[in-house]
Image (cartoon, rainbow, N blue to C red; front, side, top):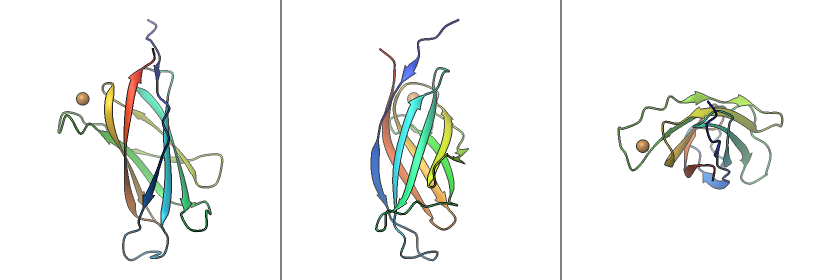
Length: 128
Ligand SMILES: [Cu+2]
């Protein structure tokens, strides 16, 4: 069976403030983008983390990516995925598996030298 390929490519820039305690002066800038993976409803997300002041890549951060649908509270249970370091410093990658198309809140949790949660609204649609 050949499913129509999903497609989405979004880019958002979000300023994430850092929780009190660790590295109190670091403010992370997170760029989150997701692109359709070969299988339907699977998306490869790339998260680029930089220090919002210096622009330096933020490495060694524990990054977890999850998702839910604000319009359908409690209806979905997408398991958060731990991201792996990408091929550039400060770049992390994770493949998420959604349960339907539509508007999702992609949740990126940062832990380690930066602690925060970045929530990005993204629309995932089938390829036309
Ligand atoms: Cu839904």
